[in-house]
Length: 245
Image (tube, rainbow, N blue to C red):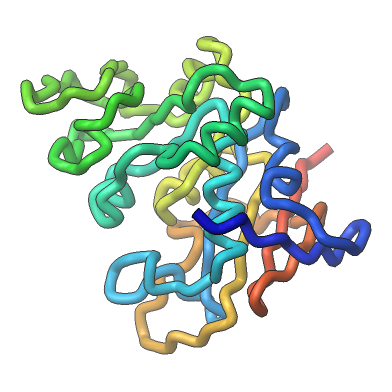
């Protein structure tokens, strides 16, 4: 396996930075961060899948480094289904990265399934990982599922209750990988602390662009830039979500 790409940090202090160093801010913090990639004209998918958005090797390395440093990874059921999710950490190098960060257990996966519609046929549910399904209705786990799955029934699969449950389990840093509808729900509920946004050097076009956030927010949210990196002409930006004081 080739060595990971170095990121060119633009802010706050210019220089070469490893993906592991760029993701290390997750460790030990109580934080919920959205990680998304979009084209320069605002698209997050091509033909219904995010893989058509070309953020480059630096984006891929940071994506997996963030996973390797998070306590929990939250993904909407629609994104799980569309992207055919598998194991959260897929190779020894990233397992070693996680161990070097002092994290002895793999990340816990989580999803919100308001009506209990879970894509049980994806590879994730036959992996050895741990997965928590938050649902608004009782859900039976099929016998074909070999992953360690726990179903937690919540009133309307309330996102705030789901995040509180994850934190009560000692899972402090939560990485959300979308989709856009889940992002909107979390932002509307005031649960998001940071946004990791990759701007891919690509223009997609079209009339029905799926944006990073789907749904109406009560108020727009101001962002404060924390980190900025460049890799293969892509911009990798980390923002803090402003909070009303």
